[in-house]
Amino acid sequence: MSDKERIYQALKEKNYFESEKKDSLEVLEKATHLEDVIIQVERNCNVDNLLFQYDPVTRKLCRVTPRQEDVDLLNREAHYDVHPECKKRKCLSKAISITDFIKLLDFVFEPLAVYRVGEI
Image (cartoon, rainbow, N blue to C red; front, side, top):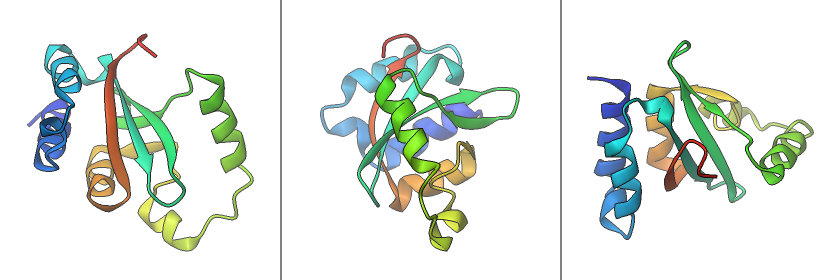
């Protein structure tokens, strides 16, 4: 199964596309490659909105900062006293494997949107 299909299945299992997110489903389905989209999630421990884009070279979802607020958040995170549980879960990582990202969708990340690259 491709990484794009794994992400699609994980979002589908969370019923993400059922609740007013038909536009995100369309964006993901029309994307030729997973790196053509940016996935926005909300981290439940402090309600930050994070943006991830797939890097096909490393096969990881990497944090991206297209807006100043995203850059500011990364700068703030550099000063966080990281709780050991956060390190273990990897929810503050700048690059997350597909498997770990899907695990985080189960209890830490709430998917918010799927955008085409350049749409944000």
